[in-house]
Amino acid sequence: MNASAPSAEDFQTANEPELRRTDVGLRLLYTIVFSIILNLAGGLLTLLVAIQLILALVTREQPHARLKQFAELMTRYCVLIVRYVTFTDDEPPFPFSDFPAKQPEA
Figure 1 (cartoon, rainbow, N blue to C red):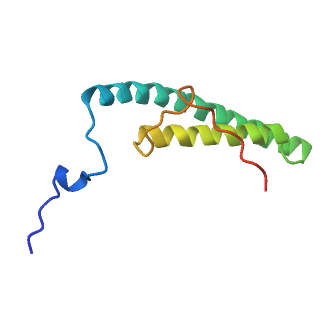
Figure 2: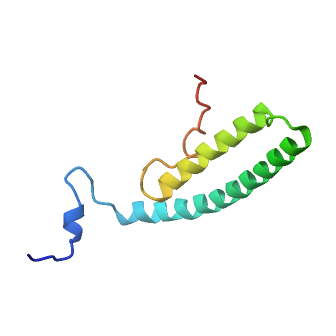
Figure 3: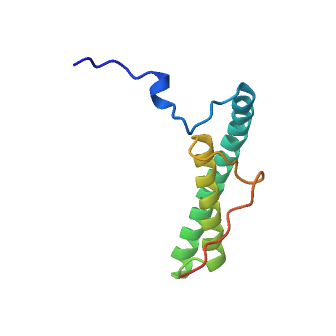
């Protein structure tokens, strides 16, 4: 049994077009920008978690509905950024597309 390492051709399928250098360069630029945005959004989410925990300790009530909605939207946005920078999704997130919408409540 010959166990050789897979080549690049083994991973490329007929459905996936080859990437051009300009596309990769633009994606690199977007990835740098979105990595900075993701870092800032992570800090904002950390601050939001701290605020929610403090309010819950002080008031002994559930966090305010608007805080929870904002946290949900920020979480969705962070997921979209991660999907883009990891090549899972090819559409760049906001501001190059719509901001993630709130899911309708069931």
